Amino acid sequence: MCFFCVKLQTSIFGAMKKHVLILLILVVVFAANAQIVNIERARFTTDTTGWAGDYQMGFNFGKQKDNYFAFNNTAQVQYKTARHLYLVLGNVDLLKTKNDRIVNSGFFHFRYNYKIKPWLRWEAFSQVQYNKLTGIRMRYLTGTGPRFKATDVERFKLYIGTLYMLEYEINNDKTEKLLQGRFSGYVSFSLRPSKQVEIVSTTYYQPRIELSKDYRISTENALNFKFNKLLSFGVKFRLNYDSRPPEGTDIRLTYVLENRFLIDF
Image (cartoon, rainbow, N blue to C red; front, side, top):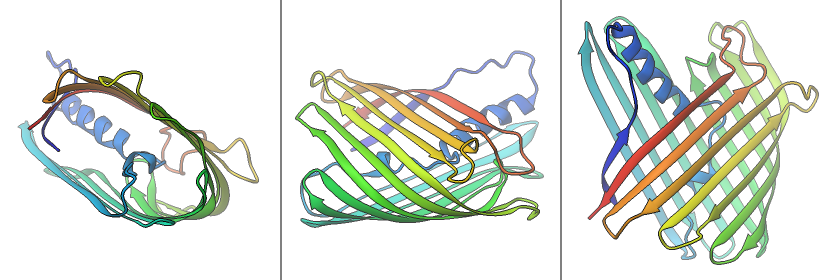
């Protein structure tokens, strides 16, 4: 278990005002809570049955002319049997200044997997999501489809999912309410060329069924190095693109690059 995690992020302050600091924090928080939730990252890759879970909470506060407060809360629980898997995941993010809530986002996700064959599972999920910054007052999702295990060798695992989902979305001003169907496809793999190196990647593609020009892409890629039993280093890049963001916002592309040291003891 990681008890200490240091995230290195590059910032240039110089003569810049307090708005830059708030913007940098905002970009990091927003990128972690984009339009598409990466469920693959939340799965516990274990062959044993029973319960597994994880809980993370973080907060920071400071002052750059105005006080600010940031809070993050994430919890996930998984229950697995020989044929059934249940996954519950929740997240809340808040960035607040003296006069305004700049970021207020969160989601709740439930997913069920049924094992048909060693290489085939059927998935069903439901999700509730909100994100003030990206113009989403509330978004409801439900979907189902097959999940394929394309490879399952010791050092390389590849999964492919092809799901249909129904989406109902309300923008911040309540001026736009959309009910639409989307295809949700994803490719996820992990590669371990050695005991010290791991590469993990997940990419989602979600086009609207009746309008292919309305689509979303999300990709998350990580490279991890384990120096010894105690110390490891990781690089992660996340990118999200929405060709038609909700009415009231023009944010189409977001991305973030993270570097972190992990100390296990």
